[in-house]
Amino acid sequence: MANKRIIPCLDIRDGRVVKGKKFQNVQDVANPINLAKQYELDQADVLFLLDITGNDRRAFLKVVKDIADNTTIPLFVGGGIRAIEDIGAVLQAGAKKVSITSAAIQQPSLLKEATDIFGGEQIILSIDAKQVAPNTWHAFTKGGKYDSGLDVIEWAKQGEALGVGEILLNSIDADGVKEGYDLTLNKAVSHAVHIPVIASGGAGELDHFRDVLSKGEANAALAASVFHYEDIKITDLKEYLKNCDILIKEI
Image 1: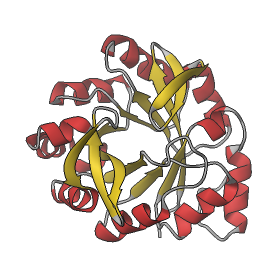
Image 2 (image 1 turned 90 degrees about the vertical axis):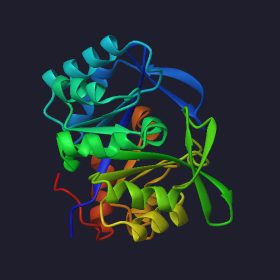
Image 3 (image 1 turned 180 degrees about the vertical axis):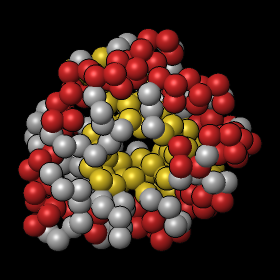
């Protein structure tokens, strides 16, 4: 069984780390390079960088490169990925993996082309999921604003069939609320595919991580504000998970 991973997420806007709730009310938090260095010291397994505007790609790629040059932590990068050229630019800037969300839905051929060119291990299918009926979720696009009509479970299966290496599963309903991950959603997707699922949205307490990595059957747990504001320290979280008999990378 693979080690479970803890992944802080840095939402980047205008060169700064920001955070919102349910994809709204975004506020400034910190300098991304300083925060990345701290997360490396705190033994984060991966750092996820998300361009939440996609307007100034040159500035965002500079942030990616600066963090890659100043840390050794693996970088997963998403946001604003619309073409093969965007993927290549992010990997060249120092990312280990690239996450694709809306463009994968708008351009069905993009995932296959990306996995063929770069290899599936470098491509993540990111799904912004919102519940539309009991035990039914749709993939949303444009930062969670538009319902694509795609069933999340089927879309995750299709992504795996197209060769992606991981699924990043963002719960829009739980985002920033700090009341826990959507365990039903994460378990359903984890059961549907054979590739790792990264759970995102809802972390507020230590037991939320325990639950999504055990009951929710996710391979990794991603969070932002609880780490940014030091409500939870990653070193403390890993010690807690270890005591819960959850297999994690040693600290």
